[in-house]
Length: 293
Image 1 (tube, rainbow, N blue to C red):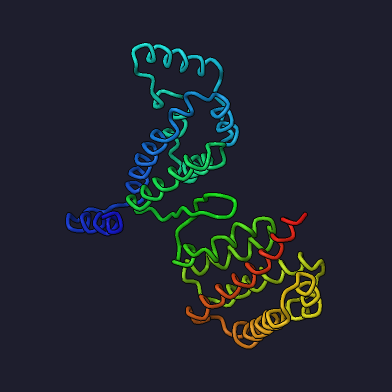
Image 2: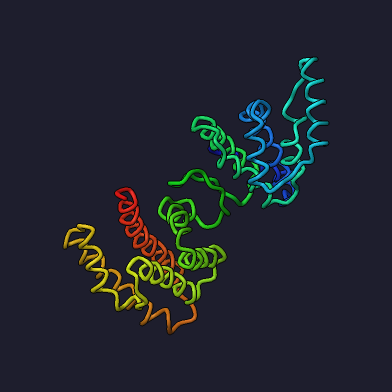
C-alpha cells in the first residue's frame, strides 16, 4: 500500500482534473511533518528547556522572555486541566509559522542535529520519509555517515549511496564539493554540456591536489598518487588499475568532451558514477587515516 501511495494520489488528482501545485504539496507536507514532530518530540521539547534553547540557537531564532513567560503561563494553566500540548509551545509556533520552504526544511533538518537519541531520530526519519512520499515534493531524505540529511530530489542518481555519501564527505573540501554539486545540478536539469564533465574532472583534480598537497593537473599526478596509495597499503594491482582508469578518464575528456559542446546523457551518467567511485575510494582511505589518529 505504502509503496504505491504516491502514484495513487497523483492518479486521484488527475482523474478529478485538479492541479496539485507546489503550494499544495508544501502545505500538505507541512501538516504531515508537524504531526510527526508532535508525535515523537513534542513531549520531549515540553519537558527539556535546554533542548528548546538549543533548537532556537541552531535556527537563529529569539523569543523574548516576556513571550516565553506568556507561553509558560498558558501551558501551566492548560496542564492543570490536563490539556498541556506541544501546539501551544513557542517551538511549535516557530515551526508551524515558517512559510518559507527552505527554512521549514531547515527546521526539520535541525531536529537531527539535536541530542534526541538514535531511536527517536530513526522514528523521525521513517515518518518524514513517508510524509515526503505522500506530499510528492521534489525533496529526499537520506542517511549518511554523519547522520540524516534532507536534499533536493533530482535524478535517481541522488538516491544512490555512492553520490549521496560523496556529497556529505566532500563538505570538508569546499571547492571540490562545489564542482561536484554543480555537475549534479546540471545533470538534474538535463544540461548535457561539456562543462558538466569539466566540473566532474575539476572536483577530482582539486580533491587530489588537497590530499597530495600539490597543485599538479590530474594528468601529472601518477607518481604522487602511486606513492600515496602505496603508503595506504593498497595492493599493486588495485593501485595500477586506479591510475589506469584515471588515465582513460582524462583522455576521454581531452578527446571528446573538450571539443564538443554536448555530450551523450548515458556517457554523462557513467562519468558521474566513475568520478563518484574515484572520490569514494579516496575518502575511505582518508577516513581510515582519521580513525587511526
